[in-house]
Length: 259
Length: 245
Image (cartoon, rainbow over the protein chains, first blue to last red):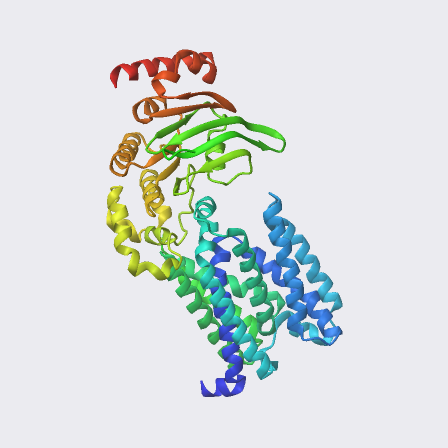
């Protein structure tokens, strides 16, 4: 364990943990809203932003976040203004941006952009990622009542004067923020999955909303620790290792699935 | 608007994509009234209720009394079976702090369940696993949780097994007796309307009639509302019930 901490760096571990815990909590709502694939495809939008940031020598987080923000505004507008199923449009539009991103990204950086690498994070980046993740977590806790209204009974929410539209938009911005943060660690291809797997696993074993949130956050943290350890000791890419650890936990939860 | 009136509606109209689904609706609701909105399918009954709740754009004037506190029991409430949300947590949506408020609110939630005769042990059950009748009771208890003085109720018995129907109305009636709450409900069952409503609004995109059920639900009004074939059926029902009540 000490070898792991000194090898990867305490602040890096903290940043990855904080980001994945925030992602795990957001995932609870994404899974309940049946937006799992939307967030997965959304993460691909970051790639052209990341590529442009690398080309113009800007901090990659800002490039990724700017493009993700455009992505969530599009999702929001599609949901709010049309009756079209968001997934088809999102699928086409966002995979196109992945293709553009791959063409734009300089080849030496491509692997890192696609799969992430948290050994290359500066301590400033790590601390800011931790702080931002905690903010995302706090905002989402604060919004959870209204988000639940919009999932279960939007009409009752409206009668109870909950600000559904505003909170739905804030939620999508939080998703964009966490995806932009996590891309550094697990890459564009897998970040969407990091928000979904813990929640999908937690849903199998939770009867109540409270236990759903707690177990999703716990599973997110455990898969990150398992994945980082596997990456460090077996010298494999961390992003895929974290995701596979999550998939392993998901399979475990199927055994204990509550009907 | 005088003190007795809790809701005043004037010249209300609602259109979807340029097509009018409600036009020229005007009525008043007095405190303690049980108002039934009746009419054939597609008459705009649910639209009227949703408009009163502020869920749909409209033209005209809807005025609630300053102290009006609205509770709403929706018509369709489909919930995924596997959704991890317990009955107790559903009630906590009333609280600004949501699930963080569990300890402080548990006593009141149990009391709400007792009031609608749902076993207290259901507090930790998933909402999606309840039967239609139990879910309807929970929705009534939910709507009453913050002590509203007017309850808007859409098709109280839709999706409820026979036998459950009367108990829902008995329950409503009892609540009305106990709390003097004003009720506006959409109903397609004229026997229920005769039994429980103090006034009716007959709707077929516009207002066909309004007033106490025995006075305004005349054979002519029913014929106009439901068309000839249905009229015999309803008029017969209505006459039978009028005799028996």
